[in-house]
Image (cartoon, rainbow, N blue to C red; front, top):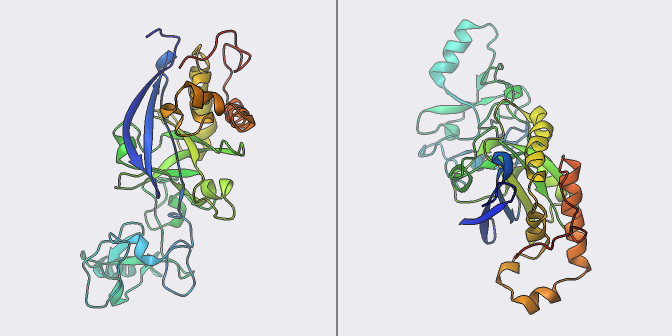
Length: 318
């Protein structure tokens, strides 16, 4: 492959909340590498100060979502679960804290139903909510029991990293861009949380509500451009703008860069259509989707060496 061209290869499929999600690996000039896909979003509220807690005050998420079993029913006699998304400590650790600091800097909720299989209980804040954590700390200098240590799902644009992306070299702290082709809305994000399932599309409330403030996301895909290794030398939300500009500057060097836009401006079934069916799809919806994706990329630093489709001198291949 010429070094000034993008190359596309199909990866194994992941899933979103409704369907299989094909993943595409895109490589190109100056070491450009991206994993691209489109999927339905799922809202992640981990790290929000009011994400988890007992029934009063009301929290953003059911407390069972913070455990190893999303359908868990809390019981004072059954402790066969683990806390995953809240900071937790044992009674002994809480007693040691109380002995060392007057008043203690943190406390646990000793409700017997909240004891997990390691005899840990959630750390509770004065507000009554539990300390909700993210896999990547936003402020590593803060203590583990401080809510400010973690990304806030309400304010910070982040996504959850999962095995399909990890397998392609994506790590916590890497960056990506999400685009809604039908509206042109877009937002950069950092990978700050994690999941174990073969899924993609889990994003913070900040990302989710950027596209769907009314939570009407069902059946509406969002395009993701994910950049493995993009977190090198950068950190936190502050690194998003720089990371995206670096990656999109590399993308701009490819003479066929607009093929990436073309691929996602077409419907998901484009690759399965014949020439006649493809001609039928050349409608105003395609043009609008193309322009919306192009505008989102340009806004973050994309400056192609050749003209944009359909003005470029050579037609797009494929």
